[in-house]
Amino acid sequence: MESDENVQIVVENEKFSLRKKDLVDSSDFFNAMFSGRYAESRQKCIFLKEPITKEAFGIFCDYLSFGRFPADSKFRASLIPDLFLAAHFLHCHDFLDALTDKILALVAQCSSYSPILFLFGEEMMLDDLQKAAFDAMKRDPLSAASSEDFTRLPFELLEQLIAENYD
Image (cartoon, rainbow, N blue to C red; front, side, top):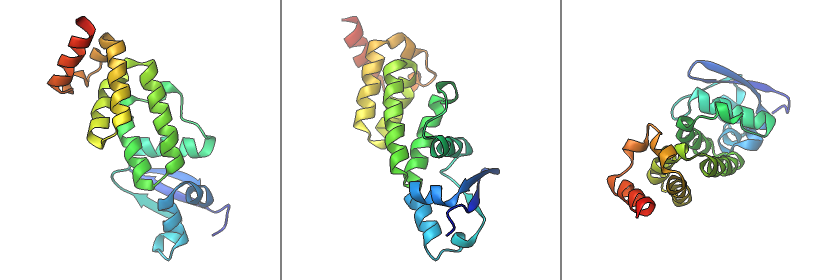
């Protein structure tokens, strides 16, 4: 494999042009794909399907290219589950670690992220994320309640939030 060789990755009809070496170095998935005897190792265009979304892959590409996530204004809470799924699917350990740190920092700053992150943490059995999200909701229940995902929280959790904030 040539180190400067580019490959097109197509996700939901959107093309991303990346260096194969960067993909191989950052992802066990791409390392196996391009280093093995798979047909994709010789192709210039690779199509990825679910669970990868173009928005999540775009953020992964930004992280891969620039070593950071986009500005918080472009980092929507609704993308967080897709980002975690992409990181796991692609086996991108550095990206997953950085994403986890970013999410925990966002939860500490803004309680309106907390309901969706609590639900995602519950679904994926991420106890640290659930705890951080719950603690943020306790600190600022009004911001948490302004989230569209607040009504999806388990009733028992809402009771606990009320009890801890208004006793």
